[in-house]
Image (cartoon, rainbow, N blue to C red; front, side, top):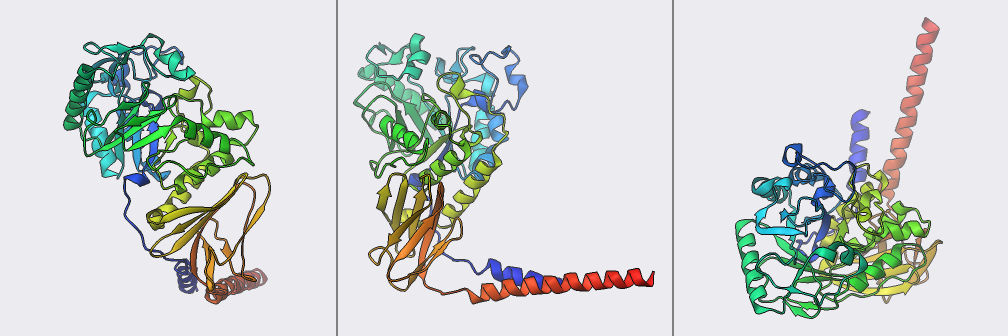
Amino acid sequence: MKRLLCSLIVILLFSQVHVAEAKTNNQDLRTYRIVIDRFLNGNEKNNKHIHNNKNDQLPYGGDFQGIISKLDYIKEMGFNSINISPVFEKEQNDYLGYKIKNYEKIDSVYGGEENFNKMIKMAHQKGLKVIVDMPVTATDGFTATKDVKMNDIAKQYYKDIDVIDFNQVANQQKYQKMLANFVSKYKVDGISMYLYQDHMDFTDILPKDMIKMAILNEVSSVKGFDYVEKGQSTKDIAQSFKTTDQKMPATFEADEMLAADNFFTPRFTKFAADENMFPGTRIKLLMAYLYIQKHPVAMTYGTEIAMNGKDMPGIHQLLDFRTEKEVTDYLKTTSEVLHKYRALYTGEAKIIYNKEGNQVIRFDTNDVDYIFNINNTSKSTAVNLDKTYVEKGKMLSGLLIGDRVYEKDGQYKLITNREEAELYAVINERGLNYGYIIAAATIIILFTIFIVLVAKKSKRKQQIS
């Protein structure tokens, strides 16, 4: 009987939709952002000189070893790259890492050069790319600019820090040389930069053949980067998911990187908390929306535990890893599904419905087409699709929740509960899965018989005794 039960379970498992996979490229980057000092202290020996006394403005001692110990944790949530705060030697009392003293030396408080190389190697072994944030701090040899554009959080931090003037050719050349030395010495996969001068062209400054990201919170434009996180888009995404019934952004520029917050903005969760919304649900819907986009996306460390904060140091709390399991499980499951069916990223994406919190996207590929339906409203919704979007003779097979939608009177009705998302594969109509139903019914019947036989056997033993 045990063998029969196992066989039936295998039949059920293999009755799912199969879709061909596609290769991942840099545009599919799913990045986990880390403030090194606030992530995890993996080796207390390298920070014996730190005397914090619970002052949130001072370093806590997070290091490269701490990141190494949590690479599996990061990967399981669906991320394929880490974007870490600056690694260079800095002022002793600076926890964030932009008060640079020496661009030529990896900070010993993080574990130094040896552990930096070890972290890169271990990340690569686990299939994670390493992107390092590069400061624009004017150390000796650089001339500074007073013409900067910063939000209030950056102003608070940079009040006594000079920023490099990239309008000066000598500064450009010196910075370009520093970057070239850094990427030739360490096998990083990319760099990111928070920029504070507008309309700068970094084409001749940045290294070739690696990922280059720019984060613009107040600056409006920059050239020379592969991907750019734009302040307005970051604000729009955060506002869209802070509560229900908000219109979601329909389109983004081709080179945009998407996020709901970063190192120098309020935490996304802060906006949700201000609306008295449950953070876990807000984060799940936000990440489902981001994960489905054909753009690189980033999530700041601690979002998975609903880390809150409006300004520094509250936005950079110590990560205690008391995770909201509901959130981490959702990220894991959703990322696994999207990885399995990532061919959808190779096709053309088109928004076919977008109304105050309910958005439907169709993905046309050379193999199987997909439809993503996200309901960020305060009630259940029903969206009707006709043959314009779903061919006759097709059905929609849900990949996240397991919903199945069949054609009725020429319409396909997508029904979702409030604050729910589903990804459908558009496949040939199969009708009812009689094999599945028969197998499930057989299991129930056999299990019932098994229980009855055990009960009878137990009763006979009691009578004999």
